[in-house]
Length: 142
Image (cartoon, rainbow, N blue to C red):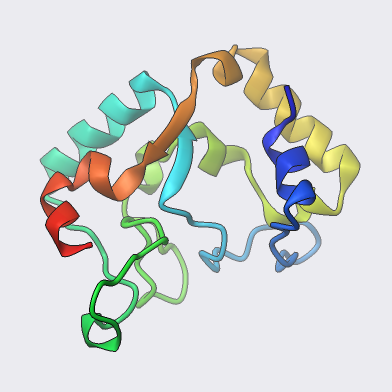
């Protein structure tokens, strides 16, 4: 089965490497509304969202389009210069391990894939619509 990185290359979904010497600058460019997550990760994030009263972020003014489709992660706070993730302490494994430089650095990509596969994460994860999963009340707005 092709890996996420292999599939991303096939459809030319390559984020620009914005890292500095391979270190994330927390720009938020990789934060997508569709993420691979395990059921345990979904449960952990849902509990955190409920405990902290986190609300979904909007990434563009609704007045721009009649039917907005926000493809950014609802936990991405673009108003902050750094530390933009509102669920950072409980973020999913893909967010913990991914860095945009993996798309150009084969050794780094292999290390990331090894870390994720080491505990069977790939066998347990499925693609989740983050906004609809954690904020189902926003479905009507989309």
